[in-house]
Structures are given as structure tokens and as C-alpha cells.
Length: 387
Image 1 (tube, rainbow, N blue to C red):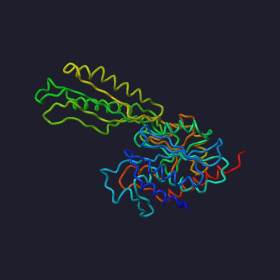
Image 2 (cartoon, helix red, strand yellow):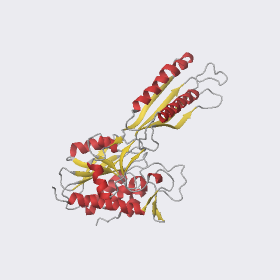
Image 3 (tube, rainbow, N blue to C red):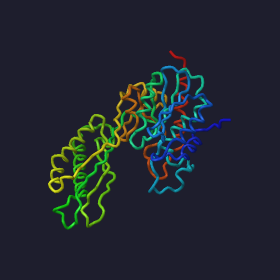
Image 4 (tube, helix red, strand yellow):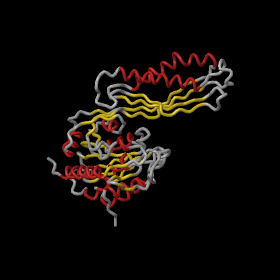
């Protein structure tokens, strides 16, 4: 007998399966496939190149056009270095809040969808459940999943990406690029600064230049874009380099990101950065060491998202939730990838991003109930006779 779940204990089950991005998500995918097959779900896996991770697309109902996709990512961010009061993968309830890694971002939404699968009968138009991998490290899994959706499924009418928005409809998010810059200098004794090329010192100059570019983006923003903050941003998050205080460093690298409002181009900033390196920094380095190099590699790039408020996806969610306000968010989502593939998109889900990515992450049970209500209404929508 296939056990039934409500959204709360389904969330607890999903959270108990550790899917930090550096690990495989296959145990969760296998659980979802096994649990949904008795309810008539048709399963399509779209695996990573190494086969250690997989997207999953479940389809329920007739193989007809007009389906609605309910989409979420299966991976979660790490817990190392965070001061959790209890085991983050043994979720617990306290004071009407459900705690655990991924409860808010975004296994709570996935659980509201999966727990409603037994109700997905007598559909006149299909429902599709799209679960991706590696969203937290650059939305890496979704593009190949979306490609298969367009290839294998009848045309769909909308996708709801259930990121935590407190059930408000999000019609825009910033694009993001994650990059790593590596500096190779020339090692000497630190008393011989005239001979060496310090990779750490060069990296510091590059970081300072990025800070200057970030300030330009801020001051050049002359209108309220609706984002918080309203301007595009640049941030250096990690830096490593050097071996000892008395050795001029040969190697240094730093990882940084750009979060751009949809009207601005990531390539414009990257071009200014590269021009500064080519014209100013590299010539200085190579006067001392012809082998000195600076290399910047793109780790991930996620398009921004902006949709007409009259989009069928936005209209659907606003009508079913009764929440007519629209929001723009500064974090990246997979919505732009769906939208760029001509699939009408909206971001809406239970929980608040304020609780995501931190120790004792939680989702309020009230938000779970709101999520349940939306999924029930979407099911009813797909059960209606086709006009």
C-alpha cells in the first residue's frame, strides 16, 4: 500500500534526504518516482553528464496541450559553519514553524505539490511536476530539462516556479553570472619586490576595480527599477592565495558574481573588467615576468526574468491566490530559462526568502497551508471542461 503524505510530513521526508548541491540528488529522485508511480505519473529523467544527478519530469493526466508545470529545485545549500540548534536533516516543528535545511528553499513547495498527487485525478488537461538539480550553484540542471520538456511534452500554458515569495507573484528577477578569476604571478623572496609579481597584490587591485565598477552601477541607476536594491551589483565572495608572509605569491584566485537588472547586460561589465586587465594590469606584470597571466572563467550564468503582468502565468496565479500585488526579486531563479524557451512563467511559492540559506531555516505552517490551497485550485483548474 502506497503511504499517503500531507505537505508537512512530505516536507519532513524530503528534508531528511540530504541533497546539498555537492552530493547526488538521486535518492530523492528515486523516492519521488517510487511514490508517484502508483498514482499514474509518467516519469522522465534528464540526467547530468556523469549520471550522478538527475532532473525529473512527472506528467499526470491526458497527453494534451494546455498543461501547467509546477517546478522546483531539489538541491539545497550547505550547512557547514552554520550554528544550527538541531540536526538540519532531521526536521522539527516548533511554534508553528517547520525547521530544517530546505524547508523554505524549496522542499516545502515541492512537498505541497507531491502530497497533492493523489488528488490529481479526472484531469482534462495535464499537470507536470518538474524537479531540477544544481539550481543553487547556477541553475545548471534546468536548461537540459526544459529542452526535453519542449521536445517530449505537448505545449504547456504556464509554469509556476515555487520559490519562497510569501505567495506573492514575482514577475521579474535579476540575472546572475558567477565567475572565477585566477592570477599567476612570479615567486621571489618578499625582500625582492622589484623582481617578483605578487598574485595576491594584483588580485587586490582587481577586486578594488570591481568595487569601483559596482559603485558606478549604483550611481548610474537613475530610476526605481522595483528591485531591492534597485541597481545591479557586483560582489567578491571568496579569495585564496599565497603560501607564506615572506614569499611573494605566485597564485591567487577569487570568485565573484554580478546580479544585473534585466535591462542591463552582464557582458558590458565583463568587457570593462577585461579591458582594465589587458590595458593596465597585464603589461605591468609581464615587464617582470613574461609568463604572468590573468584568466577569468564563467562558472554559471542565469538570465534575468521579466514578464508582462498580463502574462497567462501571472494571471493564473493572481486569480487563484487572490493576491494581486506583483514583486521583483534580486535573487536568481529558473524562471528566465523557462521564459526564454517561450514557456509563460511566474514565480510564486510558500515561505519567505528571509528564512532561506541560514541556520535554523524554517517555513511557517501557515505558509504551507497557503501553498496547499494554491495547488488544490490549480488541480481544479485542470479538471474543468475545456472551453
